Image 1 (cartoon, one colour):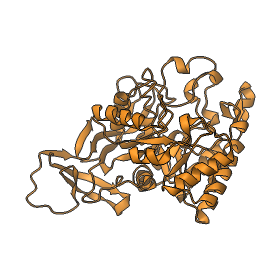
Image 2 (cartoon, rainbow, N blue to C red):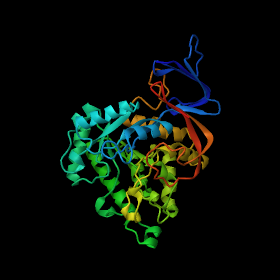
Image 3 (cartoon, rainbow, N blue to C red):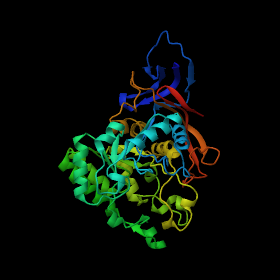
Image 4 (tube, rainbow, N blue to C red):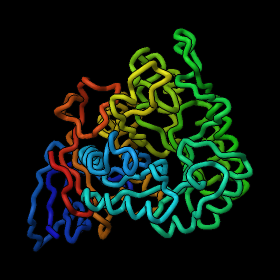
Length: 425
């Protein structure tokens, strides 16, 4: 493998408390040295990172690749290319593929496709229940042995709290992380927007905050009962954040993430006939957005994810409630995180930690850091580089983003995965 020298960059590695100018040396696919005087190092490739940030590669906990099963929306090849261009060097694939990730064969299929796409670090999340049907537990231990990093039921509801308890007990016995997007289905009732002024004005089926916060409360109670490691995915409202903060205070093994777009958009931003704003959980109020930002800053919410969901054109045509929810959001992950820094909601180090160190620690993997001897997963980005979200700059097969046509600031120039350059601008 080639030796690489990255020079003149502003290195930020929250895991090792590094925030200074310097060099990174890479050999045999691993970090050889950071900010040290290295003699007898002859680089095969030199990268000048002047005016750029050098940090660990991003770890994204929720990326739909649409493959296997929905290749008309995107493929492992197209979406991992988008991930690389966004600085994401490790990603988690939720289990709601087709077929569902509940057998070793599906896991092997995904690994094979990822290898052919030259993007090795696709971590499958196993199904919590067989076929995500919500009643029969999956073979979690077999899924873990086959390579699943965690288990989840994606957005599918469970048949009862008893099924949830048994699933948590099973997961806990094998030290498997349970990931959960909180939603009480009977309360959300197939709504498409937040229960608030926008829903009232346009007569749209709505989802109250309680649909999420009640689900959070139920899972926290059962996590306490079973000792299960629990991660909440895509938190959207203030009341959920308060409950998670209290649970952490009393020592529960719980972590949480927020989708990057929830930290910027609210129900007031929704354009009534633009289905790019149709997401689940829905955009909430300005008060909720502010609470999410504060929760990220104080550590209640640990992680920022993209919640990437590419769609084809047909999926987003029709009346707002009839369209499919989700945003193609990998490539806006970095610039929107930098916008949080610009808004003084968080520091740059906090933002990078939420994209690197914290998700890696939640998953229990040796990524998200520039520690010597560990795999050289690196993102280099120019925080001042402006670009327009359009056909010429976009890699994902899904163009469903409310930021289409906008000018964003902050662009990845290089991404390295285990010492291999997988993207260069």
